[in-house]
Amino acid sequence: MRKPFIAGNWKMNTNSATAVALAAGLVKELESVETVDVAVCPPFVYLQSVAAALSASNIAMGAQDVYFEGNGAFTGEISCEMLKDCSCSYVILGHSERRHVIGETDELINKKLKAAIAGGLMPIFCVGELLEERDGGKTMEVVESQVRKGLEGLCEERIQAVTIAYEPVWAIGTGRTATPEQAQEVHAMIRGLLEKMFDKTIAESLRIQYGGSAKPGNTAELMAQPDVDGLLVGGASLKVDDFAQMVKTVA
Ligand code: 13P
Image 1 (tube, rainbow, N blue to C red):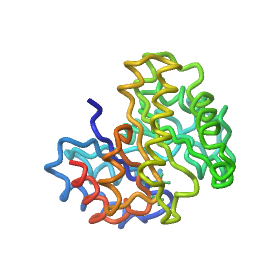
Image 2: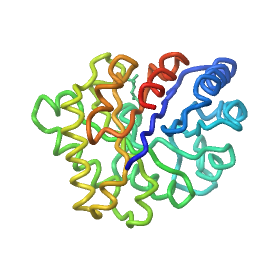
Image 3: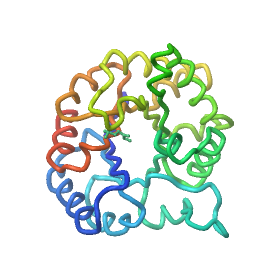
Image 4: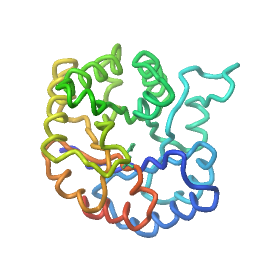
């Protein structure tokens, strides 16, 4: 049985006051939730103050990226050890905004994944097709390639730390959610691929989140799909009421 996992990706939003207020609001709303794993991923600069607000709660914290080197002359980058030091358990990797806005490649994402796991972080590894790729009938091919290249060289023991997030790029921040059937189709393909790449036990135990305009109103129908194990939430995770409602719907 896979425990549902709902994570909020705050992206480049909040400030020092609103980040802490958001975290504190969620702690209050979600204190009795035990059947769902919950995490929030604030901007780097607010990790420590959000960690303080989340302390003694059941809400975990993640970062939105990490660099693969341990330390040294990498101006502007952040290491796994720094994230652990700030109480992060998770790290989002391969997000479409990092792939398509910042220009990260599958190879770089693979290096980051390996470094994150070796450094004791649990990656939320994002994959997803562009609108023109979906319209061109290339969704499965694109997502399969991203999963294969991103997870290349990971042994069976290491892969257990990974959550995969399927985020169709055309659904991110657009209000246009994938239908539950569209999400399920890709999630099932990913699970089948994990069985081919690793084995059935791993394929059945790894959690696959859906992301892309997930909100309170579509949470139940998305989560009703057999291979949708959680949500990676952008915009709706910035509002205490919306995010808390989504978690409670799943719980
Ligand atoms: P939205 O929920 O705002 O569409 O963002 C999804 C996302 O990119 C989460 O990582």
